[in-house]
Image 1 (tube, rainbow, N blue to C red):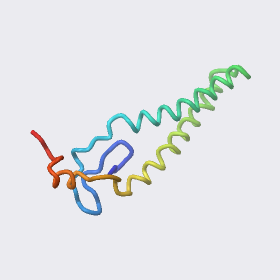
Image 2: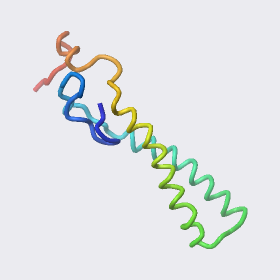
Image 3: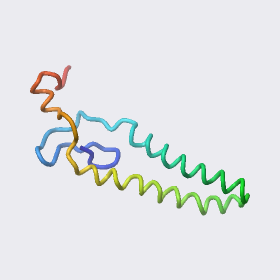
Length: 103
């Protein structure tokens, strides 16, 4: 369903169903921020209290760690983007009269 981390694919590769009406909304960045934020901020505070390093050392440690953690969090989601979506599809709902564009 997803072409990239925050972008829904235009169509499903297996059946060609249009997915332009689906939205990723705020869930992917929210979960990324929560996961990375809890890990990195906890470590920053622990290191600051225990060792009181200079600010340049904080930057040298935490910026690369944050990028690495972000890539680890994003990588499984991008692999899952190739799997078909679970649950009823838009076409199935439309065939039952429960979905579709209602203008």
